[in-house]
Length: 580
Image 1 (cartoon, rainbow, N blue to C red):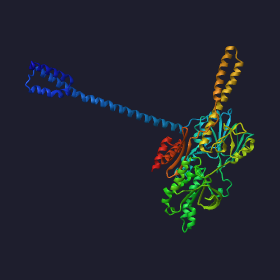
Image 2: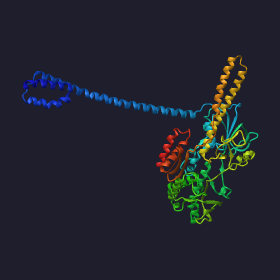
Image 3: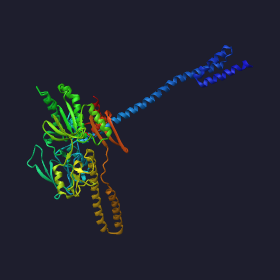
Image 4: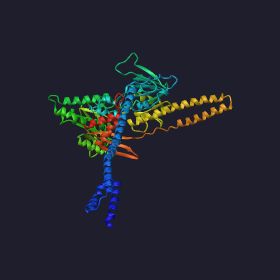
């Protein structure tokens, strides 16, 4: 009976093979061969099943590459559509950027000033004034800007202009450029404000430019006045500073410093020059251990290491930079960790730091300075110099002093115009002050001035809305009195209640609060220090990576609409330049 059952078992096996395909058939083949070797009979249906199994396996082998091809085709399709979307997005971004540049190059017509609106006069084009102008809705006022400088200067990068690291035109933004893009026209007069008459509400201005017309002095009336004239360099009454020192506040200062550096180097290499005179000419002294003085000292040492010693090899043994500071350490607004890092970096760069040293007198060839010795005694010494850069202290401008004398509430103020929590000059109702000329219990920095200007813009915009709502309330009050029936009076009363709610919301504006974002300073050798506000504390860092952060942070804020690319692209380009 066993041999008779063998064909049936083989048939079942072949049926299983035909159902599972070629891979099962190949696996089961040894058992089939074994059955045949034993001499088992092979019926006709065995051959038929075998042919069907082979035919089905061959069909599957032909279909499988097609399935794989379809799968590959689907994958490539996704990639192709992704590329198309990316390409279209790039084209859209370029078109949007081009449209923005076109709008900036071709601004729309501005409506003329409305005589019925209040006249807002802004003195200055510094950080506070420009921040105010950029955020102010000029349709609400007749705005007049008065400044002897018809451009905004990005002062944090001014030390880099002294050595040619950055071209001075790159940190200058024409005032008329962004005033032209305001909603309503803004008048600008390039003139110096010589006097403010608080009682008459008049500002007297004078044209101090080299080119003058028939009229170079006039007056400008105001309803509201913002004083943002900044401060001038403080000499602390030390004789000889203005005559023999150079300051670092304006573009012209940076250009004079660069010329003086090159003159000192060329004069030091003059034929038969005295060795002592060579040392004096090549000794560069910087007075002031704040960010400006520290950054200039670092930039100057970089200029020597990167260029001057290669151009003029004869000076490399005598060129030296000294930083003089009256306080116990430099960068007093930074943390102790960063102060020590700065002093260590300056020591590596061979920059001498003279702390606790006060300048008493300045001549054309040396400064007389008083320092404290190790034993605590005062020592008066002479420090020869070829270049003296005075980068310390602010003093009041004459126009601010004169205004303070007119206001009794300002008699006790010494450092500037005392203001309240809304930046209103104390003792006045329609005068505000921002920047270095105002005393608001904050450090006189560009960051403070910019936030003050933005605050005033919000305040003035809210004041205009308030006046508009109050005008509408007066009109509705009159309409309610003349309403013909109760239904009309109730409707007007409902509108009055709604406007009163809106008025309360508009008036809910708090006082000015300064938000410190951090401090940055370049210290040379492509290193910088940063003391940044982070969550509830400060993040103190220094080094090369901080330098690239410093450069990116400043350059991303310093851009012109004349450039055909956004500031982020500019930052990347200039950062890459730093690697070269």
